[in-house]
Amino acid sequence: MVAATALAEIAPPPAAGAALDIEQVSHAFNIDGTELPVLSDVSISVEPGEFVALLGPSGCGKSTFLRLVAGLDKPKAGTLREDEARITRPHPSRVVVFQDPTLFPWRSVWDNVALGLEAQGILKSQRHRVDAALDLVGLASFRNAYPHQLSGGMAQRVALARALVNDPKILILDEPLGKLDSLTRITMQAELVSLWQRKGFTTLLVTHDAEEALVLANRVIVFSDRPARVKADIRVDRPYPRHRGDPYLADLRRQILGLLGLDATW
Amino acid sequence: MSTYSLSDGLASGAPRLSRTPVLASWVRESGVGILASVAWIAFGLSCLWWEDVGDWSRTHSLGIAAFIVAAIALFGTVGADYLGTAGKALRQRAPWLVALGAFLTLWEVATAKFAWLPLPFFPPPQSIIEVYTDDLPKLLDSVFASVKLQLGGYLIGATVGFLTGVSIGWSRAVGYWVHPVLRFIGPLPATAWLPIAFFTFPSSWSASTFLIALATGFPVTVLTWSGVASVSNAYYDVARTLGAKPSFLVLKVAIPAALPHVFVGLFMGLGSSFAVLVVAEMIGVKAGLGWYLQWAQGWAAYANMYAALIVMSLLCSGAITLLLAIRDRLLVWQKGTVKW
Ligand SMILES: Nc1ncnc2c1ncn2[C@@H]1O[C@H](COP(=O)(O)OP(=O)(O)OP(=O)(O)O)[C@@H](O)[C@H]1O
Ligand SMILES: [Mg+2]
Image (cartoon, rainbow over all chains, first blue to last red; front, side, top):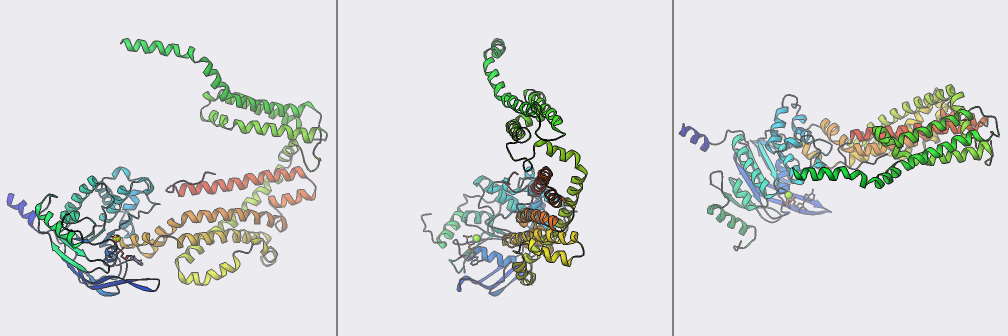
């Protein structure tokens, strides 16, 4: 009995996540005729069910990278694959929580969360999933509110629920917890980890916060300044739940902040 | 226990202490109502006191009606506390009742009694009432004809304009072909088409419907188009990553996001279509309020003209109220919409 539960805990999560292969991807924008290189030769291979955190200086190209993974933009060079299939357009198996919540102001909270199921034409039979997602982010009592009646953090939580309700294979998160107060943030981090462990989706999380990356992720990738290259690829082999005070993590954190250009006094 | 008896004693003493403030607030709340009542009594008296300088049959009834309004104003405001929301509403409008009563008194005296204003052009109130009672069938026919024409033309114009606007906003190809036509024809006042339209259409009614539709369609098209074009790409990105197909993007993203603009277009279209309606009725269609105005002018029946104008303004105002009510229903998600 004890052995069985222990086994369940160490066993890898069910293979609900997809693998992600990014090969020599480069991207650039054209601003007033001049080429602005944003990503330069980025290669990352993500295992199914991995939790990867992306760190990098502001404006280095993290959001751009996530848009490529989502299939919203095409890279100038290189290929991206989800489970061997080339990514050429968005697909609900890869759901994005954008840096900005971008809720639809004309829809109530419930209708916003229901968006994906409605777009895929399966809302009628799956209404309970919307309720469950709202419960998860603690906004069940705001189901009939409109976005302009929410606080910034609440809006961000609705955006998270709107993504989770779709049962994605790859969850793409662009600083989804950035606007939350520190207490809600810690709760949502724990929720995210437990959800990830239960569902086993692959997660790609962009964050500014090295500590958040270390508490959540299996693997932390540090981008260089623009144009972004992979500067470091760090495995975080610690069991969950992790503790912020863990000296091993504190050591990694110092290392990462060093890579980001902050000296060791931090 | 003792504190209770103490506060009880205070409470029972309170009314005696505050008698004067109660009186003052009673005067403040009902004073305007009493004034309104006085103004309407003055109007009633002004009707009945002197002899009319002309021959009008409704002077006596009008005087009686003014006294009835005065009574309602008096009892309605003084007894407002017992009348619930109706009493409250009446109290709120009491200052307007005062102004109206004073205005009507002045009008009555200046026209029917002493003819300070030149008579055929400035008919007294009773002669307008006379139009409503004696010429009612014709007036109602005109109202019905106008509403029918306006509604038909407006609905066609709004629908076509909306669909065109969405198509231009959504599809580059449609925009390529329609945009130049829109630029060329749209700014032309719809009334400029009048002569041609009455020629080419089988009936003056269909010609007028076309013109009203044209006047409505242009602003609706342009504003729908600009609404669709200005929808933030972020909304499309979100919908696309959640598995939305193009039809979903149009129906569930572009159109709802553009709706506030669409309503501005519908509002502008309503205004310009009223103008076209009246002109079309005056020139071509032998029915409707515009035609009634024209007809009244031909007979120098100025009272009929004023009566028709009042009806017309009530109808136009009602149409706009209805449109804004629909907007408020559909756009509850917006904050700070204008109250009409
Ligand atoms: N649509 C665009 N057109 C032109 N330039 C763009 C566009 N999107 C992003 N950029 C440029 O690409 C660079 C990277 O932007 P990106 O949004 O990916 O940064 P980021 O790493 O997410 O930054 P932050 O951490 O501040 O969110 C920026 O210099 C930005 O100016
Ligand atoms: Mg970003």
